[in-house]
Figure 1: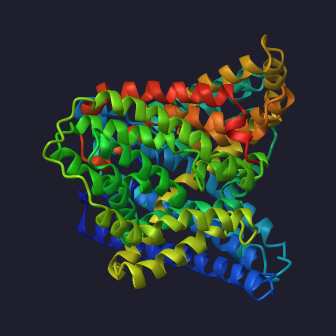
Figure 2 (figure 1 turned 45 degrees about the vertical axis):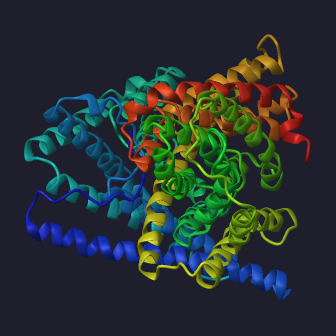
Figure 3 (figure 1 turned 60 degrees about the vertical axis):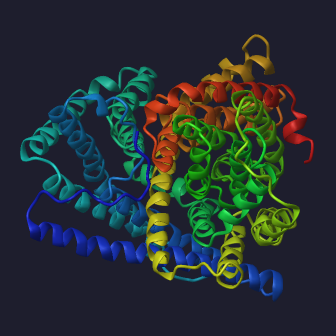
Length: 621
């Protein structure tokens, strides 16, 4: 598995001048993308201050933020292509012998390039059509916004070709291009036959083609996009330009602007020392009990998740502060990374979770209600993990561990108070209507920056630009998947699949109980294979109306499917979240596979409790 982590490109293997071009153009794109992240923070925070403090709303702020957001999403996707950081499943590819693995890597890249080449003309056509639209507030041509898509696709093509030329052997590159061209040509040649197959095309394009692409290591977003392009081009009369519009709509919805901003906030709280302050306070409380630091890890992930919304950022903030001391006390590295991955799944419902925001954007469920409903389910699962910790560490020797004094606990509490207050500030700002779920992240960013500068005196200006670039790359990878999955979901809806699915699910014997069980199984599988966000974007709009029809509260259903998805996302051998935890903890994945199953069993039991008792999710609405 690979995750979008902002890893730098591999050492070049091609001509020096090509590497110079790559570095020069790549740096320009990174700087622009970083400035766009910073601009979004300034624009949205200015909108909050102007509306709430000055009572003079900025009528143009949302429109400008939306325009810049599409550019940010596309340029972030470009950076992810250049850094080979688009989310992809490599469980099978990584097991191939060296030469075949290199060929598979080249094929995955060539497949992404094939989509870019196929869609580029339609992206230009779509941007041209947008030029006839004048925005109401800024009164500028829509082409200023629409141009982001063809420019982004063009730059992805440019960097994809550079990677193919400089980081792949000539034989592998040529073989990959010929193989992908042959597959595309074969599909095009038999196109007339597809038009006679009816709904069987849904299986061919949206099941077989997607699965082959994902398991072959093609980036998930590009696997979705290629399959949708093929379905629309070969089996329907829908103009491909419509697909571009659907991708744009899916990846640039203003609610999703919270994704890059919360990713940046997560990086910021780690850089300013706020996460470390929270961890040290919890450690002073529980460090002297058996398994104490494991309880601290569970609690710290809960608290930090209430700030950042991004699991990778949460784990990166907590693990370095705890793992050294836990290892010094005799904890096995495999158990540590297993618990870290389990806490990642446990905290998926903790606001301001990016998955919660995504569900709200694609299903219309109130994000404020989701934020309120997500707190207790996370505590239920945390209790299950604590039971496993208590049993696993019941024989710990703590004779060498000294209990913290009351004065020390009080001192760490005072230091941690500004950090502990941040989750409360974020939640209160949304619930009380001070800011939207999109805007509230900027309040957190400003708060964290001030705390880092004035209270913790830990603000490394040199890290700011790399953090902004990492934010853009990770966000671009996430948003491209959402855009591609949105286009696929639209294609499924237009085919009549949603009506067929609704009819089948509503007639299941057992009603709501059976529907819930089927949903849990489906989202565990989808979470492990497709990642969480694509699964939600694809099936959320289809399944949420059915859940409502069979009498399940939409917030309750949201918590169940998110936790089920998290269970799959952080479970080996396919769950990419597990491998992210291993990378952050610097532990080989094989070491954690044994210990993790007890934690996953506890999470499954907690999920069953949440599913069986709706009040846990809806009691405080």
